[in-house]
Length: 185
Image (cartoon, rainbow, N blue to C red; front, top):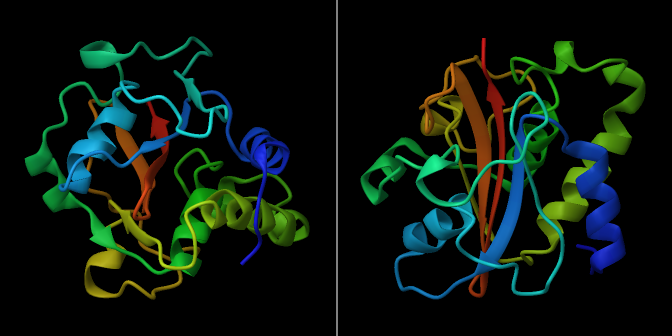
C-alpha cells in the first residue's frame, strides 16, 4: 500500500479517465455509506482533500451536478445492484473502464500497458487505505468477489440511463470514491 499525494492522484486520474467517464471522491458524512456515494455521484460533495475529480460526458461535455447528471435517478435502493469485490478486482475494473465495452480487448496495446494501467488504478484506490471496501455493478462479483475481473462476463447492473455503465465504489471510514464508465451506443 503506497501513501499517495495530490500529484500522484492527479497523474493516475488523467492516465485512466477521459471522455465519458466519472471519477470523484467525497467525505463520509452519514452512517449509511450509500447516501455518501449518492452525494459523490450527484457531484453534491466536494473532495475532502481538495483533489481533482473528473465528470466528463460522452462527447466531452461536463456532467451537471444533481438530477441532470449520469446518476440523477439513482436511489439508495439501487445499491442492491452492487456487489463486494476484492481490491485486485476493483483495480482490474478501474482499468477496464478504458475499453469501450469495459473489456481489456478494447484497450489499445493492452498487453504492453497492463502493468502501467494497474499501477495507476492501484494509486487511485490506495487513497482509501488498507481497510477499504470496494463494490461494483459487474455481475461476476455477485458470485465471486475474487474473480478475475479482466476475464469476467460482460453483464452489469445498470445505474444510469446509458446503454451500459460499469464502475467501482471505494469506501473507507472517512471517504467514498466513485469510478465509473459509460457506453452510449
